[in-house]
Length: 279
Ligand code: COA
Image 1 (cartoon, rainbow, N blue to C red):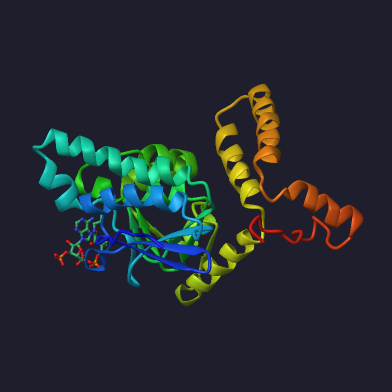
Image 2 (image 1 turned 120 degrees about the vertical axis):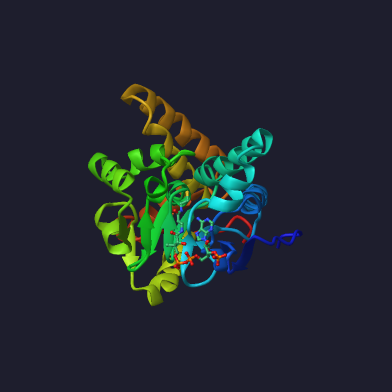
């Protein structure tokens, strides 16, 4: 699938689902400079990889999604090197936010264990987040004397409610997957042994739907959050037209035909039978 071999990350594809993992389990999948540079590169490849229909981001091993930035290799090792810091900060923000939040296919963060500090950004960037009940989340920056930087504070200010954002950022207390679900930080939490199977179920559900409609829907929801009503109405009209023009599967016509003419499904109960463009 991919020509290049990566070291600090790993990529596996299984029936349309690409499992993208930080691969440093011994370091609780903390994000080293190499993780950032490799992620920044691979996401461009996966964005146009035909085998990647759904992207699942997770951590290798059974313990950690990611323990955040590698305090030794990301922070301390580059403390006196402004050029390296600049390059790494850009790569780090690029993949965790710009490339993931703008990824053209559905993305799922599967939080299988520790999730600290900088790792909150990629959880927020993914379209969906599923956690193990016993996953451990924490804005631990305050515990070692810094603030949630990068764009973590901006992410949690948008995704958590105001009180929770301040509470967890200022106390450094952790919360588990069940609490993350209650707070709306993740969509669902499951016993750890079911997490992967539930992730696959969600991925398969998404694969039944029109890829173009999914892409335009996620882009629409993300964009209108920052618009007023007239701007949103105008944008969504244009977006709908663009979708009809760009949808190679002609989903809208197919969906209407199967409901109105063939009476083979009801949109309120489920999805029409997708006709893949290549079929
Ligand atoms: N940066 C650098 N190294 C890290 C790391 C991080 N964020 N998180 C874990 N590691 C390293 C540890 O230093 C240790 O390395 P060693 O084996 O060379 O000593 C190894 O990973 C295992 O970590 P350990 O602390 O022994 O595992 P644990 O299961 O007892 O605890 C954590 C796991 C995640 C709770 C703990 O490692 C931790 O608090 N990490 C820091 C989390 C953090 O504050 N992240 C925010 C950064 S922005």
